[in-house]
Amino acid sequence: KTQQRLHPRAMTTTTATNESVVIKTLAPNHFCLDQNLNPRVVHTIAKSLPWYGPKFSPHKVPNFYDVSGITENPEAFKLVVDTFAERYERMKEKPTKIAGFDARGFLFGPTIAMRLGIPFVMIRKAGKLPGVLVSSGEYVTEYSTDETVMRFGAIDASDRVVLIDDLIATGGTALAGFELCHQLGATVHEFAAMIELPFLDGVKKIHEYKDGLFKDVPCFTVVDCLTIGEDMGRDPIGEDVPRVVKAEEVGMYEVDEETGKVKRKL
Image (cartoon, rainbow, N blue to C red):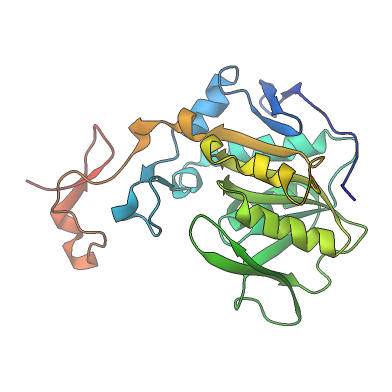
């Protein structure tokens, strides 16, 4: 049985700063901020997201996006939270809970939930939560094979849950959350992510999963990797900058003003 309900397709909304925000339909139940018609919001967020190559990333992926660029920029952070919170505030049928994925979903989910006045639920990797837990079982991501859990009783069949993460790539992590909610009888109200990597077809994989079990669940993203662009690469200048700099050696390096990249002082 698929989750079926009516949902807004594409619309223009207004942010707290009275700025119109255009939402684009990319495919059935696949939405994003229009990357061309929301220049201030999209540009501010996209250009606050540096990325690093495999040598300077925790995982060996071509581009690892660093959300600390958002958390360290109050204007960009507020725009991200406003974009999501105001989207759900305007819905006739509102979510009852926000559930965020370990760990970067924890950065945005609690603030959005607080704005909406609803609970935030942690979906954690196995081994990190106390008490009685509910498990997704093992699943495969672009990084590894994982297992996620949530606290027993955190959601139930009466809930409409927004699942949120910083990024959607292959959709493996997202589907673990979908399965948890589905098996507990809850409705996934929407899957939301700040960044989408369109070439990995994560949203398509969600909608095609198990013969379309979740095909009617909307997926909403804010910026994509093409908008962030190659110019946001921040691998250091030169081969003499280590992955980890000892605290006592920080004075030997500096951030290049023109590129934003770390380099060794001359």
